[in-house]
Length: 575
Ligand code: OXT
Ligand code: ADP
Ligand code: MG
Image (cartoon, rainbow, N blue to C red):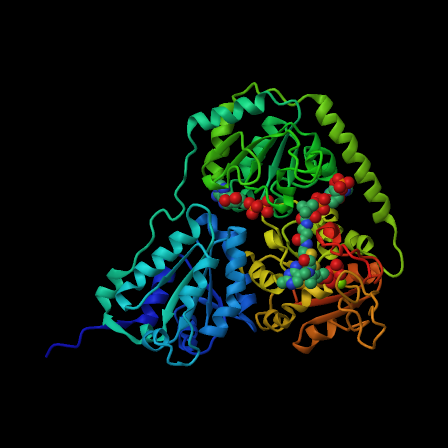
């Protein structure tokens, strides 16, 4: 008697394909048609982190991609069809915008019915909708193609400029069976998912020639440099060259913010003054005023300031996107930076002391002014006094991950809280998007095993606040600190009509956010003073218990949109 051949199915082939490629954690939310898939994932030894809303699962997967992408492992988010898919889509688009490798995998309805628009359960042509919002989108119809589909998705996400990828898995796929041995053979372990991309030697020389002639050189490190995980070489390049550097928000900590070459505290001085600027993994987008205008010393808001630019980036089409790039260096940051280091030799002349001295003078003045403000302890707390506490805690725990969103709560944290290690600061990124907080915090804890501190504006927190249950459910060492100033930017706005509704930016006064955490078994702390805040944070880090601190901030202390007030259109007509 011959025994029946062993079979496998779509469920298992998919999970095996992930595992084969080092993907061990899925962030998602169960439901038709992927509920069994989430159960089987757990049974097969994957970690399945289940969220309360797919946007937060997608944000978690994005940060997993930011932290692990350079090692060839993208983040994965799993959702149900149409509405679940759409909820996850905002995170997919955000990942693509930020150049983070994240694969959104959604179950979908029956193709024949969707294509004839016959009204299936959660009917939607998801592939078509995802396409413009991601780097690549694929659909797998047959079990024997799962291996190829997963391999293509991984390669698309992590190779070249990283980004979001959509993978559509119709419900019918999961139950399809095939011979187990053939199935195993159909899976692909992606070889060299993040191939090095060496820069051309003549481009390296062009860069070095330009840099050598500079009187006032400046390096700008972006989150691409943090992503690339070439930390030692990036630091060596900065130190060997002696060139002052400016870290973009998520590049803080590649070198410790206390580094003597950091020009962060003299930002508005160095940008217009520099003559040659080397961008490493940073785009000349709005965050850098498009490389022109008054920020850069231009005569008006669009005028070029006269700087020459060197840009190190994996994407050749990034060059000249806003201003002329005189010396493009296309390749992966690790290879580019090591080629630059080799080309610099051992006798590289440091920048003139007139330049570094002028920066130091400006920087020390700003740091001194900041120190004076931070030394004050007003009642109620303001952003500075509360962040002085956070600054001390992060200094004492440089391994901790710091998540940050809000407007004032974001901008003050960025300039007050020094970072000491790479990839510890996770924030609103290129879009300045609210809602990343709890998703990022969950992934930061899961991926790093380190304590997480999330500094959240009270508005920002609201976008993902329900995930405190997720944080408690998985018992993650997350300390959420809500900067509660009763609203968006401030709690003081008035209804211009004089009507009974509060102003659009104002929330319920004195909300007791800490009780949300208590509702799920975590620790809630009400902190009206810096002493209470300090005690609460220290205890949270020590105990590693899920903690939410409701930090009461002077409701008059914030400004409209924090540091980017000028981006608000002003009404031409005054009523
Ligand atoms: O050189 P100068 O003199 O200029 O000084 C600079 C540095 O030199 C100095 N500095 C230092 N001094 C001393 N010591 C040290 N160590 C030091 N370091 C720096 O400090 C200053 C500032 O430095 P910085 O920050 O480097 O420089 P600057 O000029 O600010 O840099 C420019 C930028 C553009 C790079 C920077 O500002 C930046 O990165 N900005 C990001 C801004 C951002 O993304 N904001 C978030 C979006 S705002 C808005 O959109 C919000 N919404 C709408 C909304 C959004 N976003 N999303 C969705 C889905 N829906 C709606 C909402 C609803 S924010 C928001 C909620 C807000 O309310 P919350 O309650 O959450 O928050 P609160 O405001 O707290 O109430
Ligand atoms: P920031 O917001 O910090 O200024 P951006 O997101 O604007 O940073 O820029 C990141 C840049 O880094 C992108 O242009 C992206 O192509 C680039 N990049 C990402 N990873 C790498 C890498 N491994 N090698 C080279 N460039 C990279
Ligand atoms: Mg607020």
